[in-house]
Image (cartoon, rainbow, N blue to C red; front, side, top):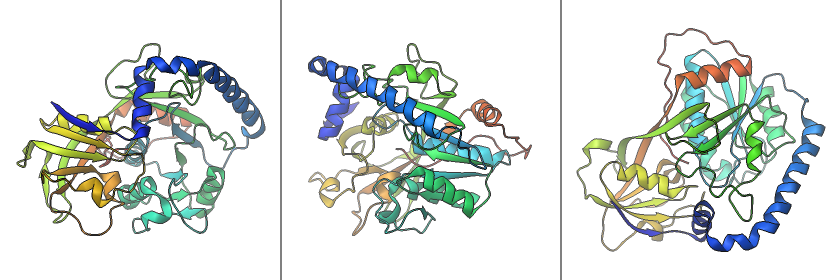
Length: 355
């Protein structure tokens, strides 16, 4: 059962695109122009930069649509799955929201989130134990060069950057939210697509977040988010996701690309969710977390890393695990030209965040 929803202007626009609201028809002529410009830009930049290979292969994990599809947790799952096969990966990111004075910046588990941005901070927290280097820079080309000068890795994964065509890539993986698909299938501003749908015919692998089939889109693999535990921020106490003993009515606050996916995770546990969607990457303020009814407030791990100041006693984080099909990792390795080692380790990959 779902409760009342409070969504930002950004989220309402996304909802219009994914439900194909009637008024979008007036934007179609601009969308046709955008599609033509996107195709021309891609051809021009690919002709100029593609072929300038790095000393290690680069794989881009991105999407062609706006709104969260789970790229960052997928990166974490893939890095862990590769590590289980004896393959060392490094990660580069734009570092959206980071305000470091100098880039590129290597991100470690203790790097200030204001310097690197929320998603790279989560990557560092999840992957530091594996020795996975993480570098951010607005120019991903610089980030890759810096990372490869810093350390030896078998492959570099780019968190997003599918449309960053000035960066050579050896492998392109597109991630699609199975619940929302490609919306109305139109490009900006009449729809949520950054590039026309036919772009999917050119990429190496298509990964679907969820079990739903998307008409006309192949699925080379699937991932899925599974709720794992609730974490009480003030005390760091944890409770198994299926052992929640607080109120069944909760406030769900999420400044991520798709807050409704977060709400669905909570609803799958039998909770009634009063959803408060905020713009992606927004730093939650006290006003976002305080409600007169004093019901439990649950946020994402991505939002938790940005919190500062006093922590309300009714504030919880939902930690989830991302499960990646082992067969997808094997296909990824083959397409990247890598060789897996038989480590005997568990080949599932998990993480504790949503994007």
